[in-house]
Image 1 (cartoon, helix red, strand yellow):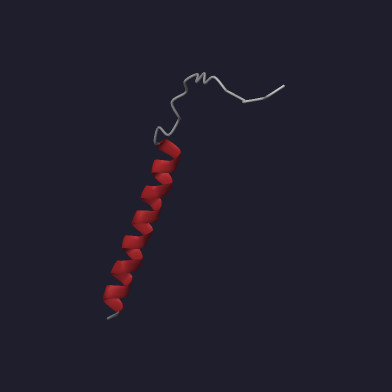
Image 2 (cartoon, rainbow, N blue to C red):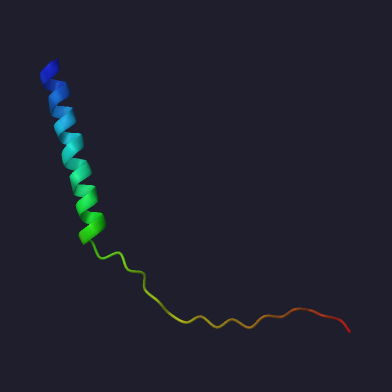
Length: 45
């Protein structure tokens, strides 16, 4: 039973290190683009 807990702890540690590595090394920059949308205010004078 202790062997299973050690394996799960090791698996969780490997997953955490992989997640941190992806967060620092992965390309997560957003794609930028200009958006122009006309606005109709429906103002009655």
